[in-house]
Image (cartoon, rainbow, N blue to C red; front, top):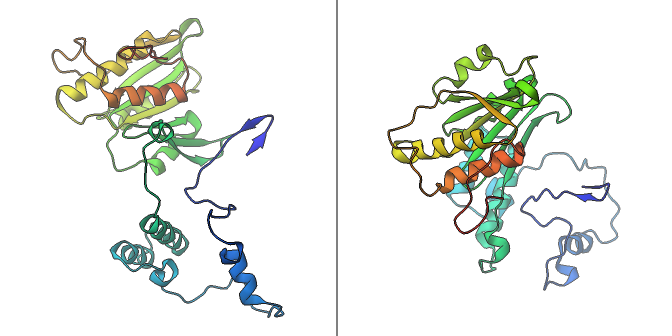
Length: 274
């Protein structure tokens, strides 16, 4: 998508519109179709009419994954179109002959964005990294959060609104009380604000406490942020200095991308946090 000098790419994982290297033009799909059609006049057949074909025949692969996709489509869990696209993608992944070499680009951080609703109105979105993820919605789109919920556990909730002196007020709720207190706590003075759900951190023990402590302290250090409430309960000694867990640093990165300036992450070893 190009506009005003800004280019935004939404990768699909499939190289649409580009000719595979090393193949002659007459073996491309376009060339094959033209060869089969020749100069025959088109019949009155509807190109959108469904074709009776097995999913395994469509993908050119009959393994357990394709069989499960067909079963999911029959049971109504996913649509037939989704099953077909996933089966073709799976076949591509199984037949890709190119060696997977690690490069600088391959080691760079990659994030997945899933948007639900109208970005200019009521909406919510999920921002996912390697292990960590955040779900975000303005107060008008809170009901969308349930549709974006993944099976992983919500481990903390940030209610973001307006504080005193023009600062950003943040309330941190635990995984146990965020859902039942969300409507009662109030997000901002005028009902305006955002909800941020966090996950992908260690599930228990000192690792969990250390990660949550790191996030809470990063909120406290935010230059224009006022932490007005925190219901996080930490294990004894969780606030001691130590290396920041990778999971917590990734979640902090996601928060920074969603709300620049809301948190100030501790500096990484050997360099700045920025």
